Length: 132
Image 1 (tube, rainbow, N blue to C red):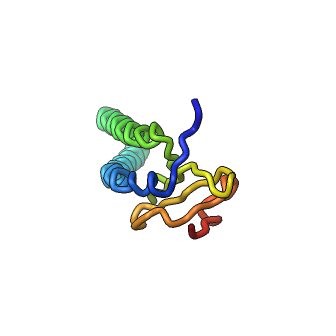
Image 2: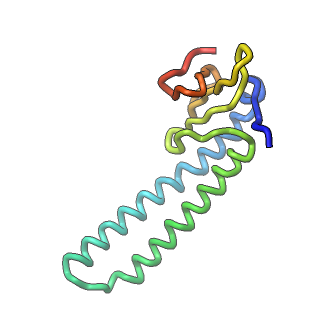
């Protein structure tokens, strides 16, 4: 399958949808971090008193993390299916494969930016961003 390449206009047209996906992913990511912190606390307690009384709670929390991670991966999969590359989920950083002056580059967008206004070479990252 050939990779999708985007024009600036095509990438910009997807931004409202991308913003909605990242708005949905953000609370799930926070919840995963909160549940993992709760698990760490339970593990410390269990080690401290040598008790396994928290085992069922830990198993429930492990399952909750798995379920949340699955939901996040489904959402990120929708982005990938469109040919968009997610670089940093927490920041909402994505790259759109594109062509510029006859070579492949990435159009770069960060959640919160009004439009796709930067690009970078395929072998550089966010630090190599240049204005369009």
